Length: 585
Image 1: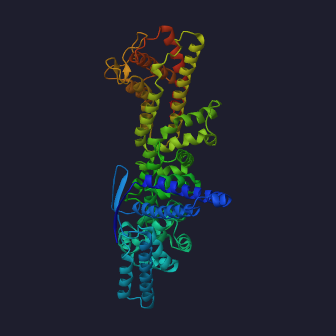
Image 2: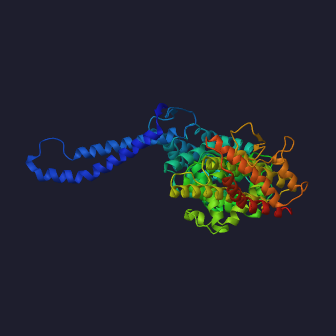
Image 3: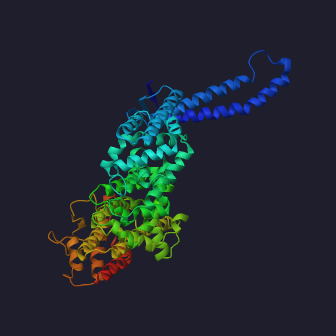
């Protein structure tokens, strides 16, 4: 008999834990209480003794089991309403014992129908099997029902039913297409849901679980993933097996991997754990898999799973970082770059979220390129700057990722906010001024290191000359746009028309800074890297001074500006020289 319930799952789980603690305390206290009562002898007043603790323990244990069952069921019921932390739904059964009994009966009926079909595999007997299987719809979300059903049906019949349905519905050699699985799901979905709910509750028969992972064909294993939200451990184990058969080894589309990725997209923690295993990440993100289902939404589905697992703040911070380390390593290799072809939903996700680790990547760059020891964690110590450069190069195979990558770069620069600090210190004591100078120079070096890293990656990317030049211009001009954000009236294309040295940047409304940079890159304007550096440094210094004024600070003196030019030039010259050399300029 169905029962309408309302539960706060998070609060209920805390209560379940508290009840378990209370039961353990009662068990610990009972021997001491019994001994004290015996020692007191006739002095102990008449009435209940240590058996009260037994009664309390039994009550709490029963209440704990019942509430656990209710929470497990309501978390899997499809039709629920959630509001203010409270989830309401109609549970198919009023208690676990009734659910288990109903599941056992359903298992007996299904097994009997299956045996009749084995004796006479005709249409009528198969329809009887289908009818018994479909009885589980709406009930298999209950773990007690599911445990009774699957324990009675058994592993052999379970696997045989999957194989028979596959023979009737799986038309692709590498798994069920969405249309095929929709048809097969009319029979298999109740079994898949029963498997999932019993497994999540820890009550799935071991032999059945072993059979699903060891003996079920890959298509059947993938169907389990596609038809129901399986437990985290099952997705991890089954996913590793499914991917061993992924890629373009055979004809047909790799639908098995499609259903794995769908399962991953439903749980952040599962995806993060999956990607922290190097072999799993390599098998999932190789080009043969990523590009293996053209004409479908597979790449978008994979991008969704990655987006949810890799975004800043997603899931477990340690797992997220370790997943990123594997991904950076993989896509630093040129044989993986075809997975990031243009357009690339996967590449867009990676370019969007990599900026959360810019400080760590900068530390890796400075450690390897400048021999500067930084306070990076031991995990980042294993990453080499060449791998980071290769990863950036892989991303930039698709010019469209420059947009999210540039946004992350800009956000990083805005957070540094060079314009709010005095570059040479204005504190009352020399000690404090030195601290200000060190902080400012550290910011400048950090910005320069990130620019060097991005340009080094750009050099690795296999882009056309036009696309490469566009990227160079965008990355060179962005710091100026950031510095001058919010400052109006004196800027053309985000840059001051007249520098504070009293000379023009040779810019006009028809020839803003981007055009000036492009003219150097195209060879239309004579000069080399040093000439372009001078133009950009003048613009940076002017933009920096204007940014200071937007913070309510006075302009720098001519002497300070000259020193600032030298600092900016020292950071920009290597970047720009390598940019021009890489393109033959």
